[in-house]
Image 1 (spheres, rainbow, N blue to C red):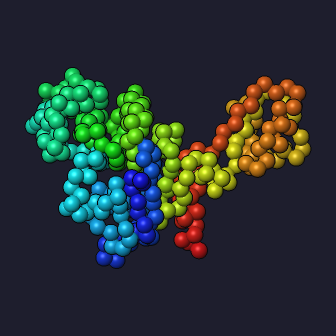
Image 2: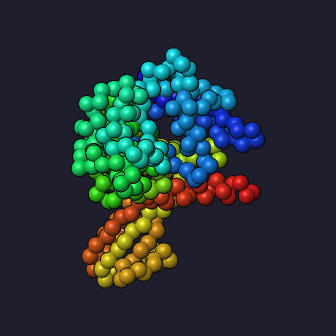
Image 3: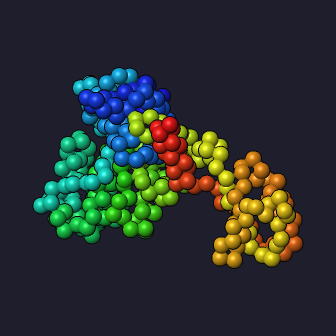
Length: 300
């Protein structure tokens, strides 16, 4: 059974069409990256999945149920949510905050200390939240989202305020959750950080899906050139000379995906070649391409 199913979903706020005919299916154990500019429809999509708002048109199913119905109260125990700007009661300690949310969610308070340890806050469990840094508050928010061992985790800009080591620890934690069957929806503007952790990316714009698929799928759809970095005392044949850009003593050359193998064979056979690096379009490149294509289409 699919964890999340949205079929022809629309959401209107008076004259604003936040979502327009959105179709989305998310499978168990999948990490989906949800990307788009502010106003693209990401937050609206998350609110629909959480059951906080109802769709104007279309069907929303989470674990096979309509998340807005009162009968779906039990399914909310399977959900974990971390919003972008976390806010807690400043006068409570970190442990008191987690115990409070554990009671609301109907799970054992025994998890609180364990989760605080997992997110690196054992040293601050008895400190008031008002003394926490932004990064510590973000870790506390992640611990709150993980209460009850959720089967579906929705994370909105989860690494905001985290240092590089904490960010790496966070993504390792996501991999562990995925291995245990947890499905994760991850919204982030820090695209280089999430690229290697998502199974699939969904790029949105003005309430529409602009592109979706794994990185290979997105690269094939965009058909952007890859870049070869060549070092050594080499002389490229005439048919490749026009593509050369010299940077810091290296030769940079853009190559279409369909001609990659032929150009690579040509370069590898050149005398004087010392090294060659192949750089495929990144998630950030693909995001820029698809959102830029939308803008060009809108201006026509």
